[in-house]
Length: 245
Image (tube, rainbow, N blue to C red; front, side, top):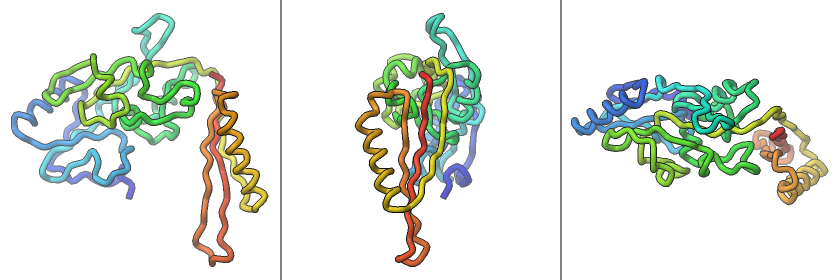
């Protein structure tokens, strides 16, 4: 089941457009003892995560769609400010031709808050670490459980903890220069020779990756159980990124 396409069954839905509006919503729900849930891009694989049935209300991040470059932290270091609505494809498209990038998702449909709050890895993690590590997220704008809007002292609670602590309305992410990146999908056959060569290449990448910190690979093995047993085949592929960073 594709969680991104399944309709929610909540009793009502709201789409706040700013932190102040979300704060008012949370305070109202607290005062009326109303259950609620809020969702980002639907990255959590657990069934019914960030969702609620007809006993409560759902909060959509649709209107929390900030996406802008800022130089507020230092003149020579830009940040990109993003709300929970954009997905990583939107973020990277926005950064195209700026010669900057961020630690973000490896697939375009992944939601921004899902990855940042979960501490996921990226194509750049070999050199720059995980997305939620200290310094990668310069600031959070969050609505706490009592409806208070906060921007400080949140790293311990929000850094890769999968977050039930606050609702995030904006992430300020540190960018870094990336002039040119190449992403390729390479597909191979299913012979024994291919299997041995593929596994040897993956092992070599694992053993020597510290020699090329700008490179990353996702090895994938496919198994097709459909044909009769004696005709079943497996094949191998890899997605590889080489970035000028």
